[in-house]
Every structure is written in C-alpha cells, then in structure tokens.
Amino acid sequence: MHPGYGFLAENAGFAAACEKEGIAFIGPSSETIALVGDKMQARKTMVATGIPVVPGGDRPLSGIAEMKAEAERIGFPVMMKAAAGGGGKGMRVVRETSELESAAKASRSEAGSAFADDRIYLEKLIENPRHVEFQIIADSHGNIVHLGERECSIQRRHQKLVEESPSVALTPSLRAKMGEAAVEATRASGYVNAGTVEFLLDKNREFFFLEVNARLQVEHPVTELVTGIDLVREQLRVAAGEKLSFSQSDVENRGAAIECRICAEDPPLISKLLTWGETRKEAIERMQRALSEYDIEGIRTTIPFHKAVMESDEFRDGNFDTGFVDEVFFPYYSGKKPSDPEVAAIAAALIADTERSLHKPVGGDAGAGGSGRSGWKQPPGRAAWGGWQLHQK
Image 1 (cartoon, rainbow, N blue to C red):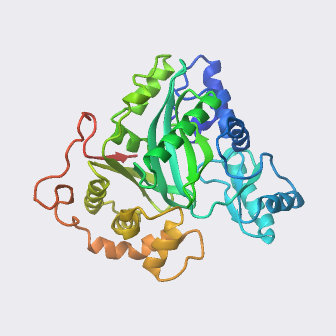
Image 2: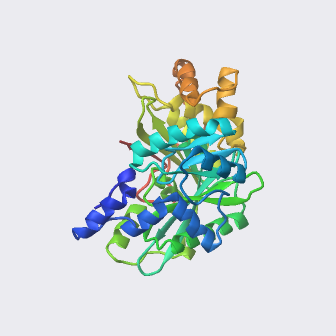
Image 3: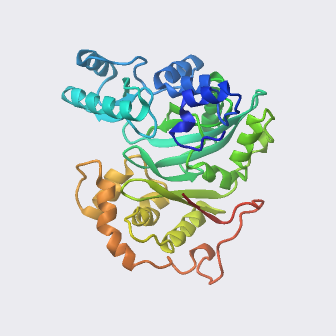
C-alpha cells in the first residue's frame, strides 16, 4: 500500500491497520510515524542524540498562565506550533503576551480540525531563516543514506512554493555536517523507508532540527533529477525487505533542479513544474521558458508569481530566506508593506493580467542560450527523465 504524499502517509493509525491486516505499508512503521509525528517527542529524541534543535518546550501547554511563563522563559518572539502538526497547520507567530490567547485559540482549532489533536507548544522564533531539508532513505538492514538537500525557503504561510537543489546557502563542509545530522536523526528514530529531515538555517549559518516528514514529499522529484535515483522504486525495494541498491558513496549530485508548485488560489495544488540544468542558471532559464509556455485557463494560478520569482535579482543571486514573499516580493509589486497572510495571493492576482499580455518565451530559447536550438535536453544518465518535468494532478 503506497499512501502517496498526503496526510494519510503520516497517519500512524492507517499504517497500523495495514500492519494488522498483513499489508506492506510503503513507509516507516506505525511506531516510527507516531514518534516523529509528535513534534515534542521528536525534539526530545534529537536532543538526546546531540542534534541541535530550536530552543523551546517539550510538553503541551494548556492555560494562558502556563503559556505566558513558557514564552517568557524562551523569550519573545515565539512560534506556537501543533504537536501533531505538518504542512504549516496550527502555526502562529506570537510577538508579545497579549497575542498568546488568540493565537492559542486559532492554533488549537486548526490543529484539531487537521489532525484530531489540538495539543500545542512553543518554540523560539528564528527570524527569516532559510529552510533546508535532507532527503533520506533507510532499509531494514541498517543502511541509511541521504541524497543531499533541497532548499525550500520561498514560502507563503509556511507552505513551500519553490524548491531547488542544491542550496546556494550551503558550503561543502556545512552540507556534510547537515547530512550527517540527518542520518543520525534517522537512526535515532528507528526510521525505515524514505523521509525528509528538515532544518532551519539562521543568518550565522547555524542549523537547527525542525522536524521529520515521515513520507515521500511533493518535491521529491527535485532530488531524483539531480541524483538520477528513483525514490519510489527504492521505497518499493525497502518495503519488500530488500537492501538499498546504492550506498552513500554512490550518491552523486549533478547539475541543478528547480520545482515550482503551480497552485490555484482557491486553494489546491494542481501541478508541479520541474526543470533540470547543468548549472543553477540554466535550470532557472529553463524554468522561465517553461513558465512562459504554460497556459491554464479559467482559474487564477500562481504562474505569474513564479515568473516574478525566477526574474528577481534576489532569487537569481541566492539572496533570499523564508521572508522573501512578505518582505521582497509583495512590497516590490504593490509598493507597500503587507498587512495580512494572503499577501502573495493578492500580489499574484494584481499582476496576473499584466503577465498574461507578456506571455512569451524569455530571451528566445532560454535553454539553448538563444541559439535557436532546443535547450530541452535529457540530463546525462537519466533515461527516465527529460530536461523538464510536468506532474499534472
């Protein structure tokens, strides 16, 4: 049973039901899902392992007095989070005591609806970090491998919009340290199958464990493009009790890949658009061309937003963090500071009509340097992948 990459994939009860009926669940065990799915328990596990975590609490909070004491201990601003959270659900930034009660009410309501678990806790808010995650896969024979990182700092309301690999923020030594931490986090939680260990990277390039996503993620093709490794195939091998078909030394990242999540603004993800290139610049240029040729009629989508991101100097220079949408993108297009969480949707709607009139290839044949020759070539050694991918839901 492959659960896909929705919330069902992280449902310990569903995994347990499969186990009870003798059905091979293609993912970690129900016990592991329960362990890493509880954010507070996962924090305790990482602390015991020596992996740096974001300062915060490790127990659920109830009354306002208790929340106030915890917030003052950690120090404002803080992030209120759902213990069973995921996908940005149940998260609220709290900058002063007066905001605690309303934030708690909203977080509990959202968490209860999404996860049937309204427990909340507090962490220190790391202002404008970069969000970097490591793809891991482990078999039942003790083999654990990481396949490098994905940068997913272009976000809105804690929801990822653009993912890429490799991250321009990591040096080789930092990449090695974070990769080792991801493997240790996997080992400490007894994790088997594919998953993602997520980190926050602050302005001093210090990294902190954020969470483990116990499933295949929407952005997994980014890793497949740069490594040439079919993650779903490996998931099936692992679920069948086989060993991984490769070791850590076999993992070689080549080129750069970018994924844009094409969303309808009311509300769902509708497709994923991926490009690969020998260099990050080439991957960006291919994405610009692919976006310029991509028509979806009848609904508003985030295609104009992604065009603007690819064209922005900040993104092209690698100078961005999780505050990009609110602090760079929206002010640039609207000329004012955003005041509500729907800012990117508003900005996308404002520029959609203008962008539609400019719907043409960027700089001629962007993928071939304007030579008139097609730049959509197949990455070396990747028989199953073209130079770009469109995953239509």
